[in-house]
Image 1 (cartoon, one colour):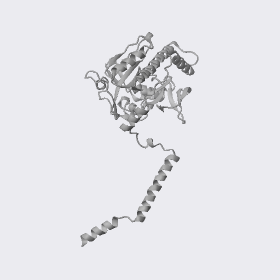
Image 2: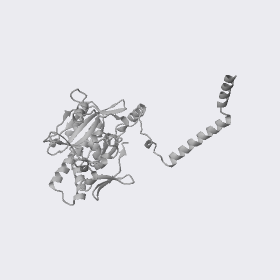
Image 3: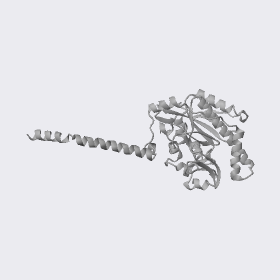
Image 4: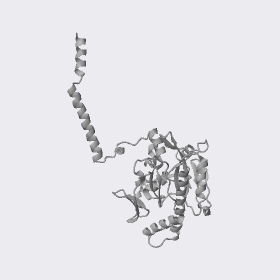
Length: 345
């Protein structure tokens, strides 16, 4: 009797009344309406609540509907140099010393080659973006980092060495008087400096695995790979990133033109740059270690030597205004103003 009574009583007690169901439905509709009004009235950015996660379908849609966006016509070396000189004069007055003139000329060659290389790789339907120090340089200086930086880093999302070599050769042919060459390295390819070109241009071969993860792979050979380079240079394995840390690309100023950079700053928040989280790259300048030729070993650089704020009067830095516009300034001199980092659409 007790069993039957308890079972019957519990079951009967858990059945909601029609009135309760009606009130519950009204409550759900009211709550949904309030949420919708809040989002539209206050322009809430949903993506700020959680990282965007691209599914395979999203990626397929992106690839199908939005082909690789081509870099526009590459300016001549003379035009780039003229712009760089004009900006240099804003800071230093009416006279450009010979040493500065040589540096600006070298930078003009570097930027022209970088733009052309990106364009040629895009023509081959290869995704390409600035990476590592050049990613930082674009965000923090609108160009090559003006101190302790000797290369341009480009991430190339392809293992088709035939296409990559073709793009490099076509690029070098645009400046035959520089007598430039290129060679293979563990991580990909490298265009070494010359008398006129003071910077390396490094092409890092990356791969996205089923559009979920991204990592540097290099040539993927036992004696030639990113894994081998990382083991030698960092004593670590190459980092593995989420796909949406890199894609879809944004654009940012680099020299005189806008070029692709990764979707987020996560790639420059890794152990390459002290692994100290967001914005560390924008407050701390210079490497954490330097190679000591005498001792033939790495020497740690003290943090007191790495404050970006100590360099504001000596080198150009990017500062963001409240309206999103980016100012490139050296000390109190505004060198130029441009729209902030943007999506590549």
